Every structure is written in C-alpha cells, then in structure tokens.
Length: 308
Ligand code: KIV
Image (tube, rainbow, N blue to C red; front, side, top):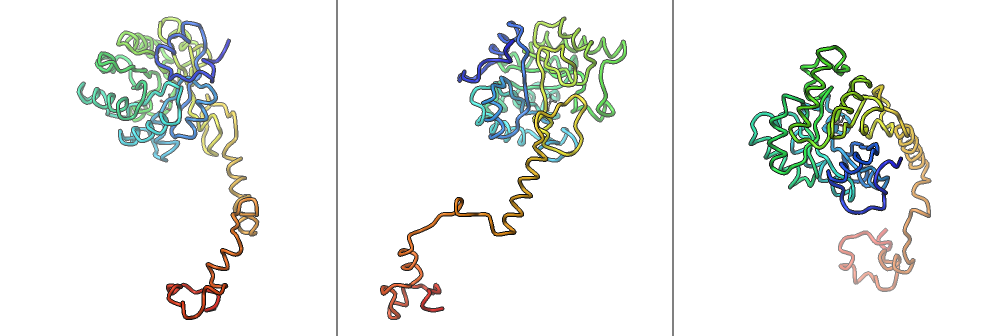
C-alpha cells in the first residue's frame, strides 16, 4: 500500500484528496510543521497533510501549555508553513478560546486562518460540545478537522495528559463525540491518547478518516509532532512517539564543532572566504601613487597605510 500521493504531484491537496486516500484504504501520514524550511522538507517527502498545531506553544515558543498560544502566533506560523509547502493540505489549529465563545468570533477566526493565513482547513478541539461550532464553520465553506480524546486546550479541566475513554462512560462519550463531529460536517477527526482497541472501534463506525496520535495502528492515519519524530529535544518524549532521527544530538555536535573551529581560527577557511584582486586592495588602502599626501582629503579620515 502506498503512503499517499506521489511527491511529484504538484497541485495543492484538498480535503477531496484526503477523502480519496481514505476511500482507497491508504493510511494517511500527517505531521505538524511550524516553519518554512520544515514545511518544505516534509512536503518534499510527500507528507499529504501538515498541521500547524498549537503544540507550537510548547515545542517552538517554550510555553508551558497550548493555552498560551494566540491567533497572531498561529497566523504567523501558518503563513510560513503555507509558503513552504506547495503541495500538502495545510491544517491550522484554532487556538484556545478563538472558537466556541460566540459563533461570530469562531467564524471570523477560522476565516482569518484561511484567508490571511492561507490554510486549507482548520482544526478545533471538542466532540459534542463543539459540534455547533463545527457546523457553523463548515456551513461557511471552511473545512474542519475535529479533535477528541485528550484535548490539550482543556488540560486544566482534564487534570493532566491522561489516556481518555478508559471506562464504560468515558468510552461511550468518546464514541458520541466522534459521531457528533462527523455529523457536524468535519472531514476528519484526530483521536489523541485513546486505547488502540477503542480508537479502532471508533474508526470502524465513522465514514470520515480518524487521525491517531497515541491511539494505535487501527486509525485511518497518524499524526505526530515533528519535533518528537526528529528527536529535536533532549527533554521528555511521549510514549506514543518514535524518533526517526536524533537531531538534538546531531545539531549539538555540529554546534560544538563549529564553536571549536571558530576558537581555533580554522573557520572560515579558504573554501568559505572571498578574496579580492590585490591591486584593488592596494588602491583602497592608499598604497599606490594615486594617494599622494596632497590628496589627503580623499581619505575622509580613514586611516590608510601611508598614515600608519
Ligand atoms: O497541536 C498539535 O500538535 C495537535 C496534535 C497533537 C494533533 O493538535
């Protein structure tokens, strides 16, 4: 089974492209991206959907939770990702309280992520509680991805990063949330930190793709935080993440080698330096007959070789 459309395909993917992958039974690989160079690289790798997640609050901006992320920050990073990814569908997270307070504000903020940010879809958290908001945004022509299970913007209510849906009541609520999101018109739904059997059961009962993170292999696709995938931090890595590279170690060694070369005077070397014509340098520094003492005003106070 292929992992998505071929990287050579150049037209921007849409939710219709994602629906086609889902209908063809292809597992969809999604990654977060927060900046231009990373978006370019992930796009070149053929990742069909990029999420400008509000996880940027923690992994890029150093906040302690996603709750601190603002619309201004989301817009700034969404624009960078859209400029970098020419082909992937870019989904922008709606930050905390940018939706669900009033329908007007939800619509205005979703619209801004699309029209100013250039996103192809937005994502927002919550199942039944967010169904009306999803409906309002979808009715305005904006594709919405849902997000249920662990919803990081409610972390203060949930009491921590805990697996969701583990009891009869919580599991039933998760099913109800998934159906409500689908019914409201979402084109896909993220399932975060849910037991794999329950996530697979939700996936079986929906006709839109489920995109899992910490929800097992039975989902229609997977999403990972790119900094986890690339091993960009020496701090905590969640259990559900796999390091496909160890960039923290690689970047640290590179920076150490650079620091040592600068200290030793071996960087830059001839290959990284630009030389000029020796005659022109003599002219600049006043070493030629052109710079006779009577023409001293030409030097404009600059110490030339003859003055030293
Ligand atoms: O913000 C984010 O990165 C997310 C993923 C965890 C799905 O919402």
